[in-house]
Length: 267
Image (cartoon, rainbow, N blue to C red; front, side, top):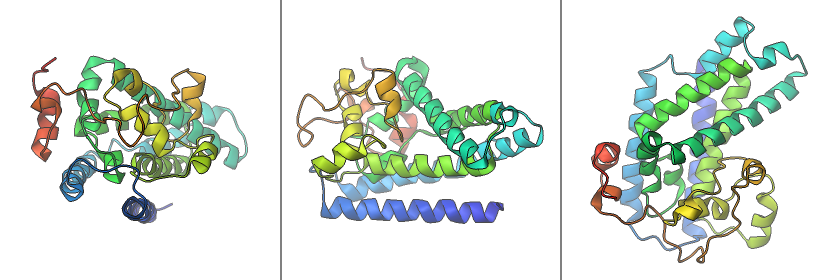
């Protein structure tokens, strides 16, 4: 697959999922927002633009590029264990998802990583833009993790592209403020992380925020005993964000989000 084709597929998929989720949030909202939706969107999407630009300036941090290099040198588990192409792609996507699950857990329990991940959790409302709201340093760290995964697994470039499309798409979906009927949610959460499932993870209660780490697949939370079916309070009234400890934990501007990890903690 050529680079231009890859970019078109990524962009088209991203725009389609984002627009659909944004429309559903307007038609079927799960919660009443506490902040201006448009202001939050501008703030969060501005951070996405900065992150995209930074990654463009760091072309060596490309999991797809690293996977091409690994394949050409016969490096990685999947280059040693031969199997049908479809099975290798499926296995690579599942293992990459496990890797990102582990990364997510680490960002909660390692203080230096939590400083940057707090920017994501500081959002006091959740919607489609929240799934893209990550500090630039965390984005760089995540790309390093993916590159290490590409070296270890040696997946086909198509598998990496598919995984990154799935990861971005499910992140937009499970952060979205949409009301999914309970019976549909019960079925979906066997296969994919749903908005109600992930909303628990954004609770101000750290006993809930340190649960439901999955981004795409829900299985890892079951396996590692971090699954929590529902929050202590109803979804409509539960408080989202960080425990309120002062203005440094509630960045209201783009610069505030970027500076947040470097400010002295107030607790």
